[in-house]
Image (cartoon, rainbow, N blue to C red; front, side, top):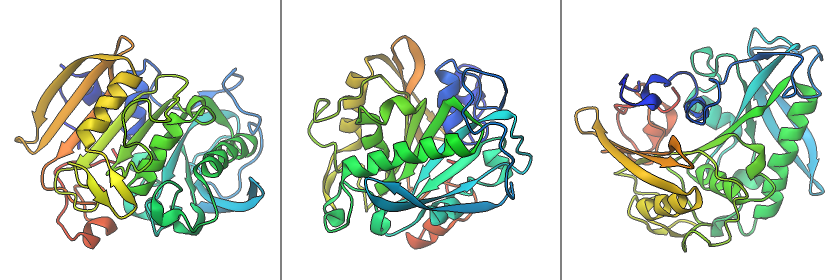
Length: 320
């Protein structure tokens, strides 16, 4: 779990899905449901739910002329007259949203709480950007459009707080989150974004490398120092060149107009935490470097991605 420290607002807000932490730092409320009527409530409010508390699937969502899909999980206590925060979870390569859900446990009530979870599926098991996706049937622009369509579809079907839409991705999904942050189309949709072991194949040459980012956006990054698939120091990855994580963070300090940087070590020195003040907001950009963590989702409990490294549970739990 995240440590509780009065000196740092981030640590006092560490509850539920860790995207809500960034929302709190953005001076939003914690991502809790909002009774309607509200300007933030979507057109899906008032529609009765079907089997809340169970993960379900939305097939044949047509986007850019292609049939796409996503899975979703409504809270067991879902109220169609209450506007809920939404968190989108993006899987890594050779995977699907259901695996990300299982690995991160984000649909578990102890993490998702009163939130709507969405798990989009990339074409052919990955998101556009890396070279291994080049033979797949979607481009970065089409995948970004798909996510805009997923958000619009969810707003029409469910009662969504339109000011509390968040995204988090692992590996290839983390790299795609970066593409969402950089896009004129998708950037305005999100209140905050987070990457875990992000593979930033589309962001390798500095702050102005095709990243239009129409508005500064709160970002959280978690990365393992022992990651061999997406090395912390950068280099050649499975899908092309990768930036060093510290270089990538530096580019986002420029994009988000960050100034003061604060650094601390946690968990007996096993975790380096870096936090920046950006646009006058403390903790607008956050980074955790975890010693000994390979290419897997950080969790104090065993999970599937740890087994694939293989490695033991981490000192830190990313889903909380």
